[in-house]
Length: 306
Image (cartoon, rainbow, N blue to C red; front, top):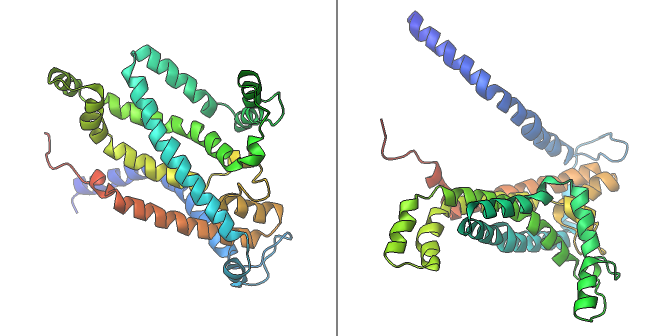
């Protein structure tokens, strides 16, 4: 090999190690390694003593034959993911983006900044705000409105409709990310398309339907996949607001696995539950990837510009 080609190859390898090396290390340490550890623990009998004495399939046998809470946790998970995703994280986020781009730029920027405040605040603060809103006593914000404005008796939304509370809490904060993504995509649409449509007599709804929404196909597809996987493993606000209760009414699958491992001390069984959650996530991601034909998004352009 000529010296020039050898030097160029070494330079390429050095650039690869410099730019992609840290990302690969982080990927191995924080993604691949935990999955491998979880896979190994799932086939052991590790408990509170943090010692594994043997490899066994008892965790999976227990999961599919003796765990009476498992199907309930799965049902709560899919209801939580579907409603939060469909109503808030995609649809409501899209409406926020459309509204904030239709008003003057400064007003829209201010509204988006205000909507992002809960995401920038600590999770505990956000959860405390929701606990104040749904407080069953008259001091709760919702009951203050209900009792003073409508003369109705106080309502206990947290205990009577706990799933609705966690959907609202996760949905309002989850819509902020989609709002930013969709706003950026709308801003990238060439302005002359809107001007031409208005000249042709198109109204606001026609412009959204025929220009804006087709241009948002890939951002909507990406946010659907991303938010589905995010909600599938999310339990932070559920734990802080309802604690998974009352009873098991808001215990999603990820929270159920967490409690089995870290509260009950059944680390091996919690790892087995987490492994099932990983498999469910992979299956859903592949199904959505194929359904939305995301492969086209990664195809190289057919026209090269030199």
